[in-house]
Image (tube, rainbow, N blue to C red):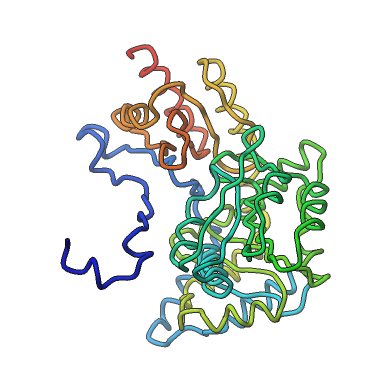
Length: 372
């Protein structure tokens, strides 16, 4: 028995911590200096120059605490989505919104429902609140709405719908989401996790399908909270800024649970500026779609199964132990995410990088395939 085992909470004893991407120390000495990180779904081009300028200006005032209400960013987001301010809550990344929802709506004896092989932080946030996470079976590498509905019971308070799903990259179209939400009972709040919104919107337009009607749910005051982030297409992952859109009353309860000054003044300034640079986001999502096709074709030609993506990463079944596969790739200077911890021991998730990075990755895969 360890010193603090009986003193800490039950969730703290039982939870496994989040496993971030490995540091460069895991790569060989010759490859450390050129390690290409394709393991965390980051924007390989970085933030908008406007955001960088805004950060540089904001740094001069970091002796003062940030605006706890994030008023400028909140107003900007409300105008951007054409909804009232009170339907917007700015948080420390979309995971900050996720944590607040779990703290606000869950407790021991209650549960949340999602799909198997979905965002791993859902379980962490739910268990930290002392509640249970129920995982419904998937269908064709994506959410199975009917199975999720079947898993809901009288103790369910939240349903997490990652759209696109992380790590599989699969998407549910707007009509299917409408039908799903209409069938969810009234004591449950649906959390639409749209972290990859910009990428999914671009892919949907190319495929001539409708991706999201998220703001319609907010405007109609439905039991829906939409989560978005500046970490992906806007390239601000290191600043931790995201937001939720949803019923004003529920967001007000969540705001009571929020850590004081949780979103820095630098992050707020960068996010405000990033919203104005549509060209930067358009360039990012266009490169992503083009490179997704190149990577998918390259991996398929090598004999691997790749799931069509609506995000900025690919889900690939390599047909062997994914951890060992990823370790060999690190030896070639490329880091990807093995998905054994998600329940897919033969699969990896690879972020879509720059054209140059992606070619290095494909060359590395070819090399380890021929030498294995």
